[in-house]
Length: 491
Image (cartoon, rainbow, N blue to C red; front, side, top):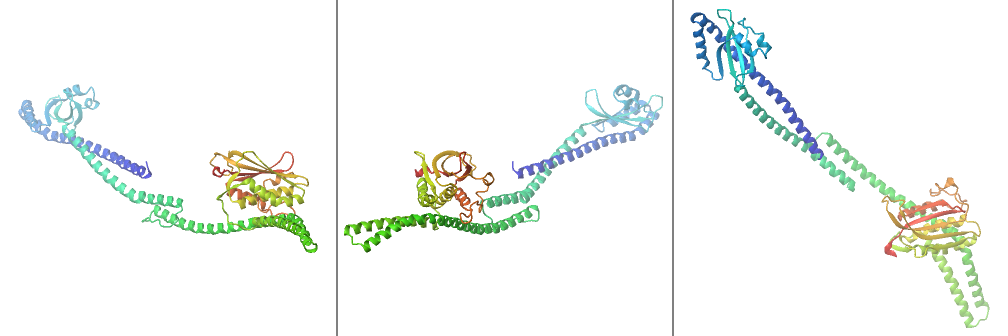
């Protein structure tokens, strides 16, 4: 049952209940008044007849007076008038009625009226009026009235009461229905529809409810809320654009910082092929070589040039900005190897070896943006290289795992790719474990890091539906675990 039905039902029941109470009180009052009028009428008739009966009794005797009463009795079929002796009345009714026992009929101004059963077990109203006659035996008029008029009046009054109550209930119910429907239900339906539209993103302030009551005020508040939300939405949109632009710039800054550190290691990597090229070029210029020797030197120069071109191209590809795309199913092992290739000179300069271990038959394809995930691997692996002492190693393990997502609330077990990156450094101090993903937090020396690497890595992973965890190893060093959702269609 909706709110409209509840309110209308409650009001209608209240109206009906109130009418029942009022009509019942009115009905009982009318019945009591009719009964009192019957009693008063009988007493009035008796008062009128009593003097004439007393006079006829004195002048013409008892028989004549009683006969006159019998003649009068036939005038009204619903009223019976006859002579009675009050001692006989007390004997007949006194056993059940105290008022009859105390009535002696000695006072002509006194009267007695009550309702009792006759010999046929029918209810009648008995009214006794004393008459002053010679002799010591008190007697008077007994006026017996049928209660049929009272019954008919009761039925008529009850029918009228029910009809009036029904008319009032229908009228009151109809008026109540109209008022509630027009003033409450329709405005509430409009408010509900508008609330649903707001939930769907429609923030147009077009809610219109006429009147001057609280619902109209609520509609004005909702329109004002829509306007404010629309303004706030636009503001948030521009703020998000600025935030995304800033984040992208920070990511690129971190990438350039990484490129600078890699360049130091690559300088030595490029120096060797440059020396080879220089030496072979001098040989061609200064020495008299056979054609076959010249061709051989040219091949060596070409191979070394291609080697340097590959290194520089990889470095440039990593450093330049590219449009974000996640439409490709990338092989994560391949991306790790590419990062290894870029970081090998830096790792070799620090005397650190890079190891990659992928579980047999592991599913390693994920729907990702290769540049972003490559930056994640670069940031974490470079940190591991910098934390590892000379002659140590950084190991990357790739395997599949089934678990519940740490960033979603669907509580379902799914397939993920787990990439563990382990170093052999001193580990991370316990007080820093909760801070290392905070932007600009770093324990490195000036010039060795911006403090953005791990925070950007976490953000990029979360944008891909993954996450990153960190812990200290039992033996030595730290372990970073990267989780990415697997895509079956890319296998």
